[in-house]
Image (cartoon, rainbow, N blue to C red; front, side):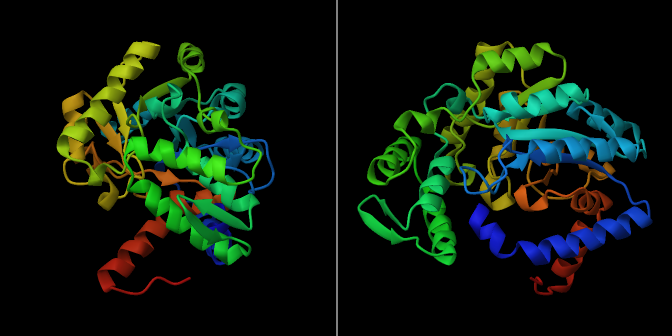
Length: 347
């Protein structure tokens, strides 16, 4: 969330920028799949999905920086082909999760202007307007109010610290809800708290299927699955997860004509994906799946094509130096080293 991220942003930016500069001096340039979400023209983070979004200006500058350093911007399919061939040349593949409307209105013109391919992982219930982008509504309501009423309880949100705590608390509650509970809770948030959001706005942050078909026809846009309602897969039964995963693939084919072979797990960490999701992804007909394990690609990843890593680029990481740091492989190596030595995380 945007506010929570802001509280620890400075140490992160300073350390990652230093690593990025070192990586550039040493010419450490790996192969990576990047994970974005919203792409906006807004300059403030006090807006829905502010912490997860990046600006169009940053996306443009990143593409130009990559090209200036001779790092190829390739499709996910081409990235996998190069990985299988053992090519040592650095590359980046751009992916975007969920299916935000601004992916078409803001990001697509940037990708098209620079002839850069991209893949959007679609949560089909969002595009069908049957499931709300609840995280947008939650962050917006908390950001603009000094108190938030939610399901009969009042939460104090007058200070930055209060807002961060309430966002974490209510986000955790939403993740444990069923789809019908999510819809009811989202409507409760809108109805019970002052904001400039109408009920319909909770369902209108997403792409529509016409936008998907247009981007697919351009030859730059590819599309994969991201479930039907963006649930925490680890808490679903096998049958429930199967419906979410297979239903998503079927709906993408039906609505856009795209036979999706790529999948991205909602949230994406191992404890959020669960033990049975990968098998169900394969059963549904997806050949490749991505997590949010934040590191560069390795040749050994080909042995686990349903658990590929992606580097998430969020608002606080909007810096070419920070992306250079991630692509060097140094941050993930430091993290692995801490884990092996059981050292505490700094900052």
